[in-house]
Length: 321
Image (cartoon, rainbow, N blue to C red; front, side):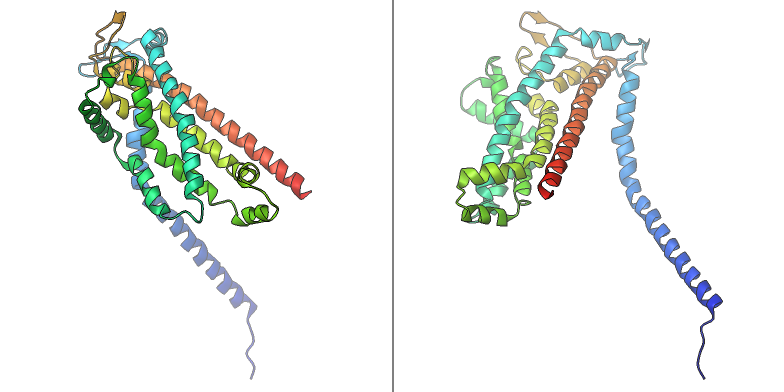
């Protein structure tokens, strides 16, 4: 006696199996949102809400302690845009980024090339040593450097002509490890067979660097560059603990300017002095204004990345064709 397959029963069995698969997938999706829920709550509380609240505060006059004095419209933004000290702090931030970023990236690239060599020994130790300052709190490093500079018997942090250079040097050293790791990650994506083939063809170190290494790092270098620029323009804790923006406003960057607007006890600059009262509304307007400037840089980042990817894709298609 032979068994026969009933088409209707098989169809129902397959349909039931499909429903179980769909139901199982649906629960997996739901559980993934549940796992993400604590993170989403924290982001909403400590990132999204402060941004929205800052935009709201920027239209009122408020000292942060008593009841708000009322809606002032765009008055806070006008006051920020016409404040000489705001633009001076922006200039200091740009100055810091203009020196820290190129010097730091150059040193990080050279170190990455050295540490990426297969014959170089104890690379893990050197990588850890260079990355160590990056994992330490900038505030702690600033305290340590204040003590070191004080122990040298010099007043570099009190000299308006020197203080910014001291901060730049410390900033280069403190964040060098991040870019070193990024460059090392980029170098390890380049196939080693390309270097071996180039050596067989007689290419020297400079030739391999020019025709293999630098083109291979092109995409990640753009990302590293733009991240370094944005990170440098957001410097705060290092400057705040080292100098508080002084002396005579000589090291005030935009974030320390906004902080001092929010909490008062403001500056006394050479040729001009002012004791600004605590004004959360004005500080919020400054932070929104500066945030819009950084948002512009971020948009430039997306445009630059899109163009590079498009150009790379066209070059690859041309090479295949």
